[in-house]
Length: 450
Image 1 (cartoon, rainbow, N blue to C red):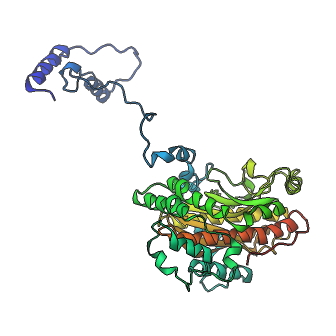
Image 2: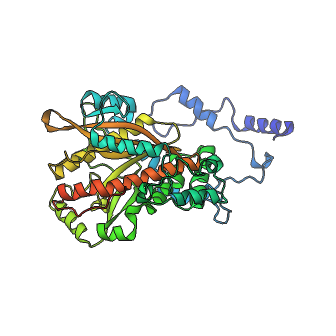
Image 3: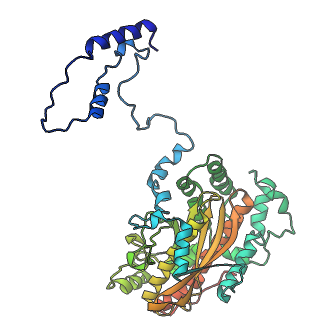
């Protein structure tokens, strides 16, 4: 800090440098219009600053500090994921805004939903509402509701592993002594898949979810630390992905991040006010084996078409990999209507692409989807509605069934059971329909998972 004598010497120097009666310097441009206010500001900017030597911060650098991280710095827990987050840096923004939106970015999700509803492009219903759920979807809703209550989400082996684990799993351990509503003895749960190792559930999912919530981390951090690892873990232990079934099916069910992938323009729903172009965060897809007869069949189906992809997206690497489930994520308790709008647009585009590939969409009962808000996972679905003027088809979005929460191990077990159920549905319902209706092949017999 400057002392009193230093300030006095500096003020004296100003009087010697700038005298109030000093003539104005001549303008280099004779035609430039004078502006008194601008001249006053210019004179103010010419006042000298105190010499550096008069400052008490003699050692402070004159340049801005580098923003690059120190490579020798010990990484913290959050910076451990910095590389993953840098790849997904745009995911939170990309999943809520179109890269080429016209006016939709300036309108709220509730207005966009109202716009879609008013023009009859999308109808929104509740699973527990007055409108009857179509029977094929109702059967799936019944199964998912059962798993979401916890009934039969564990095999006897899973329950024993949880009872005997050294990991802290909270009060859930007390509810696992037989007979327990959580334990399935019919074989249905084992047909869906296995529970992953307990330490993975606790260390890689539960702990990370609590950490993200405690520190109010952004959506991209939730996606990379919790949501995607949980998707991968659940599907890794799904029955449809065991080696024998992979060889028979010529594919496995996998999750992938599509937060930077656009929907193909021709499939984006349009109203008089907006072009509703939105992205979602993840999807499940059929990872078709390279150089397999199945890959050849898909390639021949789309090779001569304007859109050289079996899907409704612009992702070249997914062009031969049929998408089966859409997943949109948000932070805990936030943006439900935004997520619902994104799923509505995604499934509307998906239905439109399927109708372009086949005239037999009536036999596909619905398209499943999942909305995640931080800890909380919910099941939603989209069915085809009435035929509109001009030949367009309405999409009906049904919501929602709370699946489970990553706030505890019990909720994580429920989420895994439902994800494995959706994987089985994709292999046993969606794929046989796709093979027959789109690829025009007779599907092979499928062993159902319970």
